[in-house]
Image (cartoon, rainbow, N blue to C red; front, top):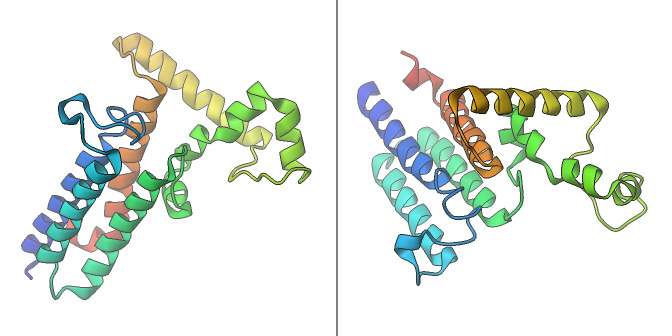
Length: 188
């Protein structure tokens, strides 16, 4: 494939995955089909969307083994996230590329709502474990992040839900994934 063809194909798959992740808020965290598709099972609905992206990627990158491997890794990671039904519920690579995803971890709400249980979990006194154990530095960074979001929302009259804010971080992460994985095609 020529460089411009590869670039266009990468952008096509990016756009289809963007459309899927942009359903996060509308589907209640991939738990309910949108109103216009009522009557469809959410697993079937999301599975069909992911199958379509896989088909598109398979066609566009047939014979392009290295690019195909990277594209399908991102598709697999997206599917993993969709099937987790937890926040952030992403693979570690996504949190490395976009550390702000960690700010949505359930550990923070557990710290606020049940500090005693959080303390027991963090000390290994329960059978539960968390993917994140916030330290003071992370707590301050999270507070600053949400303070900035609230100020921006107030200035621009944006009434974003926490789901929408998380969705925006997912979409930012997707951009970072594609830019990181395909920089030789996208930045020239």
